[in-house]
Image (cartoon, rainbow, N blue to C red):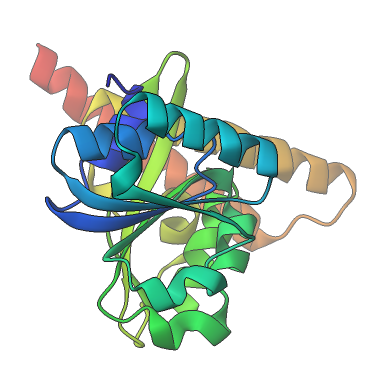
Length: 234
């Protein structure tokens, strides 16, 4: 099954032969593709709504893969923790929703499990939750799909967490190390969003030196990245 660039980037993190839990599976396109490609030996599909879950079941049945999947009408991951999946995929949700699913009370069950997260919004808030609650962000990648660039995070729980600067929380530590055009476009988008927030605060007289310094640091990084890209192309 062909996947969108966003879902292909998610699929690339799945180890061959894994038991995969797809949280909020919707139409089950991703687990179907993973099973067909041999990346997933068994899929656990969940959704909070009965309609999408039944659609997922029908799509899996039509693909002839029903014996390799099970379905749960549930909110979050608590109900499926006893199934011990090797990998949780939580994609297509807001960052705050993903953070809520990975609630601190459940972290003791997540040691040794791969977490593949694809937040649609609130990436900074998700990074802050992860790094301050014992999770380690192994890497982040970007996927360009039409006019939008998506962030995909591969994480684990080690109980230690990480120290991130404000710039790293806002943009992603790994994105700041990237040297391609997708990273430049992504960071430009983050900068535009920060500018809107900053000028809104200025109008309300609630802006701070930290806001200005963050914008300046990001702007300088983007200038250096674009200069490096121009040198490569000349």
